[in-house]
Image (cartoon, rainbow, N blue to C red; front, side, top):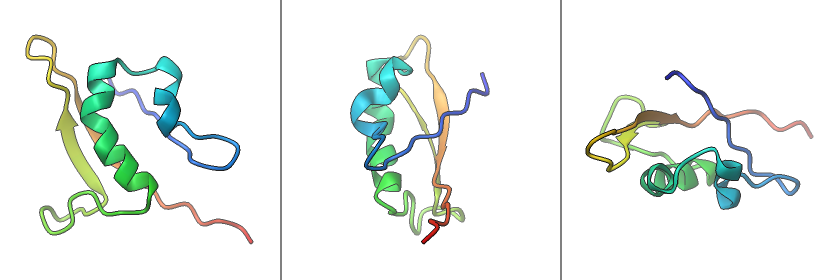
Length: 80
């Protein structure tokens, strides 16, 4: 509860294609990956649907033990 994960996508590290090195079960990753991919590409997750375009609340499809998670894009300036 309250765990935070920061995914990086750089030439040296690509957390998306390595499923966070086993930190997620496959069902959670399947439910979240479309939103994570969108954010890593710089896209807006819920553009026009919510007041916070860079954030979405989602959940996995495990009906007996659902996991609810918040995904948000945090833009970090790149140094030249």
